[in-house]
Length: 66
Image 1 (cartoon, rainbow, N blue to C red):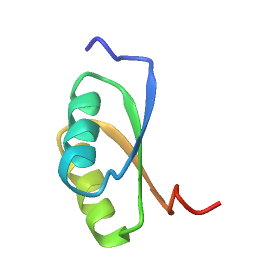
Image 2 (cartoon, one colour; image 1 turned 45 degrees about the horizontal axis):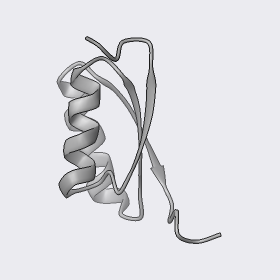
Image 3 (cartoon, helix red, strand yellow; image 1 turned 45 degrees about the vertical axis):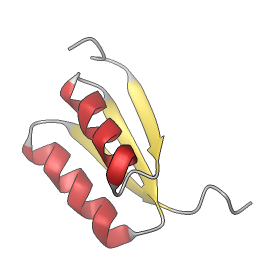
Image 4 (cartoon, rainbow, N blue to C red; image 1 turned 135 degrees about the vertical axis):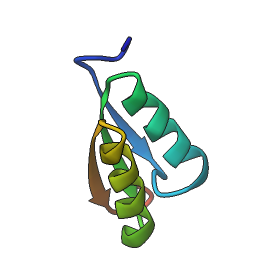
């Protein structure tokens, strides 16, 4: 629980490395905000984190778009 009390924002959080990083940070106790363009995959990752007892929030958007 080294990240307890901290917050993290992960871009590309719906799949692959971004989702894995979000899960790992949440497992360490961080509150995680996952950002991605794909809402379906993003919600799946957030549900998985919450099922494991973590705190996660989904933000749909494209960080490359001003």
